[in-house]
Amino acid sequence: MATEPLPLQKTAAPAPQDAVPAAGSTGEPLVRFEKVVKRYGDHVVLDQLDFTVDRGEHVTLIGPSGSGKTTILRLLMTLEKVSDGVIWVNGSPLSHVRTPGGGLKPAGEKELRESRKKIGMVFQQFNLFPNMKVLQNITEAPISVLGKGREEAETRARELLELVGLSDKVDAHPSQLSGGQQQRVAIARALAMEPEILLLDEVTSALDPELVAGVLELLGDIARNTDITMLCVTHEMNFARDVSEKVLMFDAGRVVESGTPEKIFSDPSHERTREFLNAVL
Amino acid sequence: MSDFFSLLVEEFPQVRSGLWVTLQATVLGALLAGVLAFALGLMAGSRLLLARGFSRVVVEFFRGTSLYIQLFWLYYAMPLVTGYELAPVACGVVAFGLNYGAYGAEVVRGAINSVPRAQYEAAIALNLSPSRRLWKVILPQAWVQMIPSFTNLLIQLLKCTPLLWLLSAADLMTVVQTLRDRTGETLAAYLTLLAVYFVLAYALTMLMNLLERSAKRRLGLATGASSLFKSRSASTAALGGTR
Image (tube, rainbow over all chains, first blue to last red; front, top):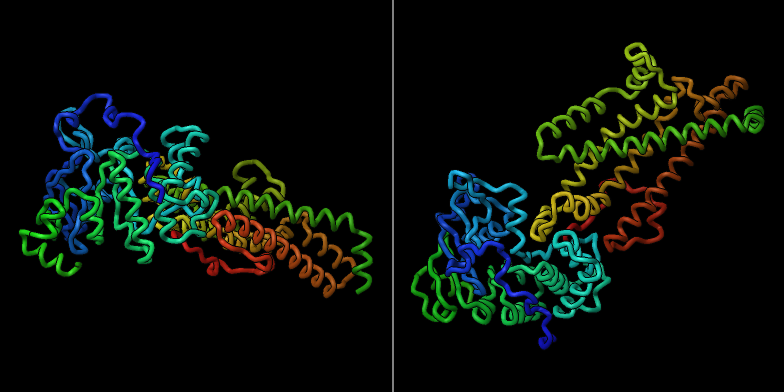
């Protein structure tokens, strides 16, 4: 993979997304979950969850299936609504709006679209649009959402396709690509929206084993060469070790333990973490 | 039998205009049905209860009342109520449009619902606006699913057009009926009708297959030349959504 001329370095400084310098610049974490509860009926998926992610951090969420890891990403992408609690991004509530009385109420579509501007997501099943060729998959949102010109968007899309090693697939249909190739396009598509936060939801789980390494290498490149904050749900412990600075161990909707990968993998302090790692490593 | 066919040739201009009326009623009826199908089908998926309710009521009403009666109602009862009289063919177009629009609305609704949820989510993750999600992501995928069902409905609509005879609308059925009455050749007359409607229906099927082929090609799905001649039922129009 071509790592030299990564067309990823941000052209603008990452700070001025907020016209009003919100609490974000004053040591406030980029993402903060505050007593977040997610319930489906009687089933509690996230139980009063508190955790933070700092700007530029690469965080891996691990834990047994059903522990609520993916739900966290889906809440951040506003694909789901919190049952209780607040998610703060850059000091602003993600899926709430402030009421005149100083309280918070659930945000409408307009405010949600504002919140989504900073966040991108890559899915386990790629979810490319089958009705668009590869190039249009990448340019559609930059053109219609960011208001970029077609030419600018296509130039950028070609750069990103080169980055992910698929320059020759510009005019292919998603259905003509392998899983690994589709996932690379999906990563390029997410990057084209210039997210501050990139959510990776088990992005290698649906791939054939021989394709996993390439996608992980690509994500490692992105982590090292950009200032994008990454939240990653994965069963690839190698990836957690190589790319992330922080690992959060989840169980039953709560953070059981968090720390550097070295600490978590070599010296977990919690019995539940030890059991989990024994099972997956 | 030769009497009938020589009269058929003699009266060809009349037969041709009958055929034209039939085609007009079919095409215009189908266009109206298509517009209604999309309008009602999209309303059925609306977040607004009022829109959903309206769509539901209209669909159930026009599906649940007989096409014959709708036709008679438009032609005979409507003028009594409104004072306006519609031409027989116009009555046909409106009745076919409403009736098949109601069936079509269910096709549209079902096809939209069949697009995997993950496609909506990917569109949300890219921050596409709700209308952009629908028009750029969901409908193009749903469209491929709709075509086989639309083909069935279109052919059914064509085969309902002989009902225009009941309103003496000078369609193909009416014209050939007149020729039968003049010659007394029942067998030849109805054989001719069978053949003509079959040819028309088959031509429509091929046209719709062409449409399906181009829609599938846009999704990068392989389509062979033989697919043009097949008459597929809606259930075989499998489409691997996110694959």
